[in-house]
Image (tube, rainbow, N blue to C red; front, top):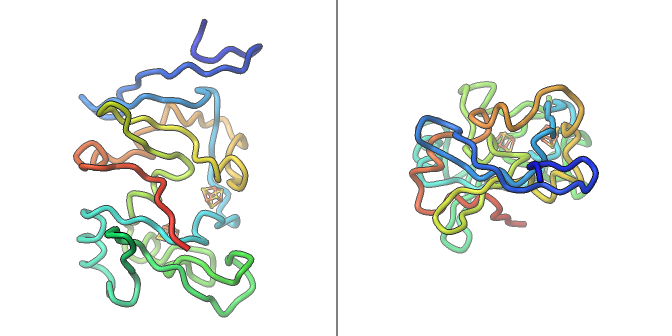
Amino acid sequence: MPPWDPVEGVTAPRRVEVHPGREAIVEFDPELTFECVPECTWCCHHGVLLYEEDFAELAKRENLNRSTKQLRGRDFVKREDKDREEHVDVDGRACHFLRDDGLCALHAEHDWKPTRCSVFPLSVSVVDGEIHVDVRDSARTYCEGLGVSDRRIVDHLDAFLPPLLWDLDDPTSDVVIE
Ligand code: SF4
Ligand code: SF4
């Protein structure tokens, strides 16, 4: 059976070299395409997991006391109340760095963003010591960028999965806070 069977709709995992010598097991339909819809901003309405290296990089750019919090031993970018009606979740909150204009302050002002923000709408997990990548469950429901372009995700995995992920003790990306 091919990795993606258009009749059965079944995806068999496939091994892909994402960076030289760094492979991931791809669990999603290789025909799936993605292009971010900037005015959407859904994925920036939440707290964001910071890997240790991200935390150090963020410290060079922003005040950590104002922008981060710790929960269960992990660091996150804070989710906070915003005094606006756009670019917020239903409870009026969003990522500390999501500006009023819908742009990420880190990306716009520092040309940098946390690893987890690059990974979305994908999710990373580890099985038997290997990195597996799939589409995040919440992205299948809320991300407006899936299936709207000709840009196959599987052809651009290096843009979603920084090499850093292969050096981490735990690159699992689906860790959320309220
Ligand atoms: S949810 Fe998807 S389309 Fe919306 S801003 Fe995030 S990546 Fe872009
Ligand atoms: S850090 Fe930037 S890209 Fe990441 S969730 Fe916050 S606003 Fe969005």
